[in-house]
Amino acid sequence: MKSKRWLERQYKDIYVKKAKKIGFLSRAAYKLIEIDNKYKLILKSNDILELGSSPGSWTQVILKINEKSKIDAFDIIDMKYKHQNVKFYKKDFFLFDFNSLNKKYDIILSDLAPNTTGHKQTDHLQISSMIEYIISILDIIAKKNSSLILKIFKGIEEKNIISVLKKNYRKVEYFKPNSSRKDSTEIYIIGKNFFKIK
Ligand SMILES: C[S@@+](CC[C@H](N)C(=O)[O-])C[C@H]1O[C@@H](n2cnc3c(N)ncnc32)[C@H](O)[C@@H]1O
Image (cartoon, helix red, strand yellow):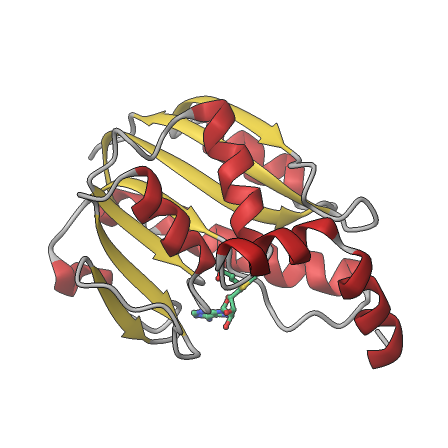
């Protein structure tokens, strides 16, 4: 998007204004607030894995809701938000060996996004490959009965992803927060009660 148009949109966007006022690092905070208002997953989750955590507004929200939670956060760029309960891994999650942590989580959150091209199909395929990778390591990272919050861009792979997730979680739903831009194909998938344990 042209930088002038982006700037104009930022000025008008109520969530950008709100985020600034409250001190959240980005408007993305409101997406997680809306998701958790509906599903109430964070308060009961102590061990949390966040994929795509920078700059850190989701982490801020998590710790506001559940100050006792311990978060392992992954991103390829630095997190601005720092907190004693957050262990930040500056890593490409595709290349990280999650076996090495020897740890399972109560909730896995992925707000991962590839560098978007603007070409909807390409962006969809890239985020789908991220999600497919997460699904492939669920046995290593997900506790029994744990939950999942995943960002996806809608598209052709979605049906397949949902059907695989339904084999891993007792309940799988879509949620589009009001704070997610209407013109974006972004939507969140919520999984509850992971049950596929080897
Ligand atoms: C939409 S932003 C996340 C915003 C974050 N939830 C927040 O509230 O501050 C998506 C993030 O995914 C990260 N990302 C993309 N590919 C990644 C990869 N392979 N490994 C780790 N992080 C990645 C990007 O660097 C970016 O910071």
